[in-house]
Image 1 (cartoon, helix red, strand yellow):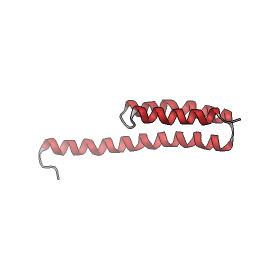
Image 2 (cartoon, one colour):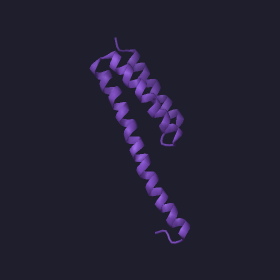
Image 3 (cartoon, one colour):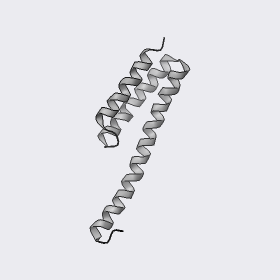
Length: 87
């Protein structure tokens, strides 16, 4: 357990960051799931709209340090390709 005042403060900060990052990750996953569901239903317009809504969320996660830049780029690329492939 943390003993010094600095270590105690860092422990408090880490708890707060954990909650914020958990919420942000959850929000991003929700947006990605909506894109997946739209792709599964075969509705190209809904999938495109969901993808457009998911992109800034995912990039916000990158800028806040929740996801790595390349991970987000890979996810976006794969989703975009799948949306484009809907006939």
